[in-house]
Every structure is written in C-alpha cells, then in structure tokens.
Length: 490
Ligand SMILES: Cc1ncc(COP(=O)(O)O)c(C=O)c1O
Image 1 (spheres, rainbow, N blue to C red):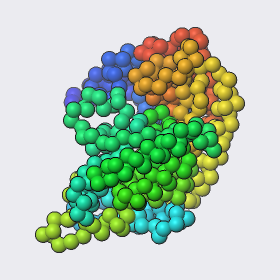
Image 2: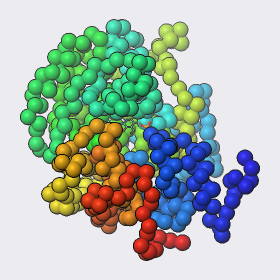
Image 3: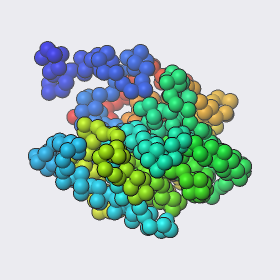
Image 4: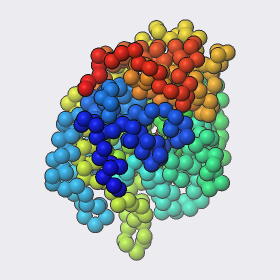
C-alpha cells in the first residue's frame, strides 16, 4: 500500500476525509448495508478509556452497546492491558496441538473453579471440569455441537444426530451455529445449506415474577417434542435466562430447570450458550447458575477476555469428556481444533479478567446499575407512546420502539424507528446505541457507574425526539452541532 494512502496526517490527526473514504469502500462492515453506510460520515475510533471511545476527530462517545456486548471493564483497563503486555513480552502464540503453555493451564484451572463456585448450590457435584478453547462465540457453540454429536456416537447412540433448539434463538454465524439459530432474517439466504433442528417455544417473561399464561402448555409441548424425538436428539441448545439477538427476550423463570429435567429423563445433553450471558452480563458469572441448572456443556465468549481479545471457550462435564478417552486406534479423540485455540495473550487477559471480577465486586456493580436502569427507564418511559414493554436481565436491556399506531413491530427488518432513535442518540448525545429490528439494545460495559446510567437514559430520551420531529432518518446526514461539547477532548 502506498504511503500516501495510509499515513496522511493533518496537524497530528489522521486525515479524516481519506480515512472515511477508505473505510466506506475498503472495509466491509459486519451486518451493515454498505451502500447506506457510505451515506453517513463514519465514526472512526482511535482510542478508548473507561466506558468511552474517542474518535479521530477527538469526539467522545459513551459505549452503551459494549462494543457488541462484550465489554466488561470499559476500554483499556490498565490491569488487562498489563496482562496482555506481560504475556506478549514472554510468548505471543504457540498452539495447543502439540504442546501446552502456562496461561492456558492457569485459565482452565481458575475458570473451572469459578464455575464450580457459581454452581455450588445446584444439587449435584459440579462437573464442568474440562476446557476446550476456540476463537469466538460462534466457534464455542460449534465446538459444543460437534462434541455432543461425537459423544452420542461414542456412547453407542448413533441415531442421536439432531438438536432441539428454540424459536428466536441465535448462536452465531458459522454453519452449525446458524443451523441451531432461528432468526429467519439471518438464516434465510443460507437455509438450503443448513441442517434441520427441532424447534421449541422459548416462553418470554416480561416482568420478573410474572409467569406467562401459556407456560404450562409450552412445557407440555416441550416434553411431548422431547419424548417423541428422544432417540434422535443429541442435545438441547439454549440461550439460558435471555435471548440476546432476538431483542433481549428473557426466559420465563424456572423453565430452564424443566428443560434440564427432560434432558436427564431422556438422556439428552444440555448445551448452555452463555456467550452473551456469561461473565456477569445478567449478574452471576454464569447466568444459569441463578436457576441452579448446570449444563453438560457450557459455551462462553464475548466477556471472557473482558472484551479485550477474541476467545471462545467450551466447558465440558466429566460425563462428556470421559466418552472421548481411549487408545489412538479407537479414534475417540475430539476431532476439532483451530490454529489460535487457546492463544496465550487471550488466555492471559481472560485470567486477569476473572481475577478482577472478584477483586472489584463486579456482580454487585451489575446488580446496582441494573436496579437503577430498571427504575429510571420505567419512571421515564412507562407512559411514553412510542416505548413498549422494556425487557431486562442485569445489564442486558431491550427497549421496543412502537410504531406511530402504538404497535410493537417485532421483525428484524423493520428497524426504521429504532434506528432513528439510535442515530439521534449518537449524533446529539454521543451515546452509542444499536437497534435490533425495532428494539434498542443497551449492553454497556459492566463496570459503568451511576453517571453513565443517567447519560444513557438521557440519550434515549433525546433519541426519541427524532420520532416526533421525523429527522435523523437512517442514512441521513449528521445533524449540525450547536457548539463544541464540554466532554470532548482535543
Ligand atoms: C448467545 C450468543 N451465542 C453466540 C454468539 C456468537 O458470538 P460471536 O459473535 O463471538 O461469534 C452470540 C453473539 O452475539 C450470542 O449472542
């Protein structure tokens, strides 16, 4: 690449116009309509500190979507940066295919201890003792699904080749994870190449303590489905506690326990996809521990490294792990691996992240901030004609935006109103929010303070004004600023 294309600077600042043009034409952004993206001035980040990101134009943005739901401690938390730097000075990468390394061992030991501690009241001796590393949340799920299939094959149940999954579930973008997912928009174009899963209802609980009326019939339908297909099912795959990508749909309380009961009865493995909920997003380290439901296989990603480096982890129970033991000639070894599985830098930062959870009482902070959000959001928006019933578990919040007729539109493709609200919040309040369909998702760094709760709620309030005034249409131009914001640096 020529020097002029990469190093153009104006007074110490990168040339914004050049960067923007390159960003809009060379970088292909995920889940983004690039034609639309090219019509707005892109926000190009240069550094981060705490819950804030700073762009190349020295503007400050509050990261209320936690950089795609993974940020735990804010940006560039010094202990985590040190952990990466220390490890980088020692060893950046070696693979786990032939040898091992210290951070992979330390993290596996500490993580399984922490998981056991979380499940200590679950009733059975905790058995999630075996850590398999991969690169991201999708691969953590992909690994779990392959593990379940190979397990069933190796214990002699060769007809068990299918999965039971849930309506509106999302487990990632690789082919197995996509097959287990059921958000139509994400899968439709690939559907002919995906394998079929048995789909059950995921009963959504709106307010805590309120049981959906239809819960009993949903339970009966689930049991009938499991009983009817038991000899075909390898595993149930579920997002426990809350479905994230479906727009933050909380699961009815106690339902997870029912699922586990049926899994035990019919000898089906339970795979908990805690890529989103794990690492305190909903309060506990492992969300399903709040319901005392220990899965056979647990998937982690996103927050495991504090949101600093990519990593996926699949933790297997003794029962699963033991089925993979044998002589080489038995060919029972798990047939999966990635070049960067268990990368030492990612392991080192994940280990420090785990220590910080206890040192800084992260769970307490999540609970306190979650209570504040719960109270303030309802106080402010309960009567708002364009705000639907707010969904929340911990610091995972979904705010449905109603259409002009007061209806909640739930499909992913109709996102115009929520998009208007988010764009206005970004442009006028400098708070980064993201819509999923017509639901605004709020998933800030878990270490945020009360001040940022107010900042986010005020930004949503500001964003909602766009619906009255009809400005800030998706793809519209950035509105002019009234003056320089005090919070900005530069
Ligand atoms: C529950 C769940 N599983 C899996 C994934 C996929 O993770 P990744 O984007 O790291 O591949 C996500 C991502 O949002 C998720 O929410």
